[in-house]
Image (tube, rainbow, N blue to C red):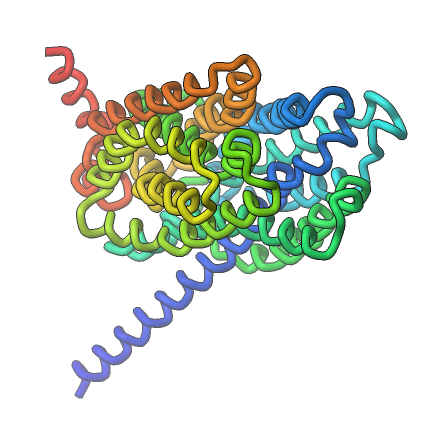
Length: 452
């Protein structure tokens, strides 16, 4: 009787714990969705607001200037990764996530009310740049902290599956931004969208951020008081002890970020500028691809729980290295929207081997005291240098008549990611969440073997 009651009580406690963890993942990921919706509204609505902030030049020139501002927002990410990573490791993951979503709200509201070039001249693009810097700082802190939180709160043995919802909501933010664009295209003319309609999504984003702030206020903290009180928590000195892991994350994040932005935010512009598919159809193709891409992320997270994160990473980087040039060439040569969709999905499926586990595959390589800093800063540096500049580099190379060079650039970076994936230790055996925590020792052995 006692044993039976104890078993039932234990099962009830486990069920309650599982519900608590799932609720925390939903609450944290909802804020993540809002953050990325706000951030990507810029990318999707650039087709319409670029002329009112950068009136000089042709379509490609205007898009290039708006892409440059997009890239500058990315360059704030390393600062955000450092600042919010330090806050998360010293004051708690919850505190960091609350501040980041509040800053995103401020940046979106600022863009929504900005005056145009016709009203204040060069001050308009300068203010747009400032707003993007605020958003870049926020997102730079959001990724590392939310990835750390979701990896720590997830159930052992199912961490890949639960952590995959970070990219579900990240892509969901992109998808919602794209859906808002399509809805507004259905009700407003191109002239209305250019004149004032582009402001609507930024107002929506600012309001949604307030809702996310409320949801995140109920989160449980995953870092212990002892970890937060450690004098080395969130410091560069402590992070430097794990410099090999940091470099590995830089290597595979560079290729992952570059390929991700190539097949998502840059794709509508590529379809419009190169494949000569009209703006509305290009938006519809990208939206449909994003939706499928979003719903398949948990499959790849679940797969990593079965075959291991390292296998996922090798598949993503190896197949990615082989696919970019033929895929991008084929997409640019077709005006068939269904074929374009199918080709884009091939690329996104391969990238999903990485994005489905993007957060946890980094979190497993760093100990608790510097996990948020290690994940956030390494991601932000690689993401800003390669992901944030993807559109600007692609548009520049097209402008100078060497568009195919961009495809080879992405290929080379995925090749570097493949090397990083080879060097990376298996987190199941050498990881700080489920393994023995000897990541540095495993990396040192791999380095010595490579040198030999």
